Length: 143
Image 1 (tube, rainbow, N blue to C red):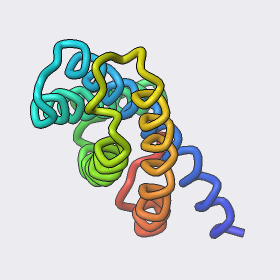
Image 2: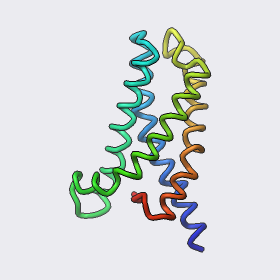
Image 3: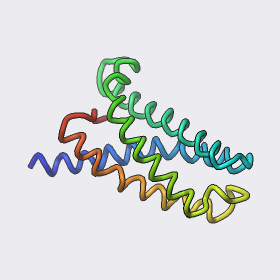
Image 4: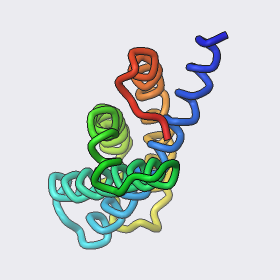
């Protein structure tokens, strides 16, 4: 059943994207919160790092699959990763912001981690159907 395989593949691809994005997102949030930066700068740092780590994970994974270099792999994955990361970042930052995870005094506050966990889950489920559609339409490279 090709549809079932596409769904299973989209589960895997979305999880891979989530891990890459979340590493960058978490690093950015931790920097912003610990340095008491404004929410705008905290989000900016988190988004930039999420894109950097997310794209790096995807490009590196694709590079390791075949005999292509990182530039070639980036050319293959840029569109699908851009869409996935964008949706994931919007959802994760909205959830984190509204749950107060960015308004805490320290990363040691439980609210910071609870908000991040909810944002993590929301980011996954918001991006999953988009990745499924992109894979079905052959618009997302699978790594």
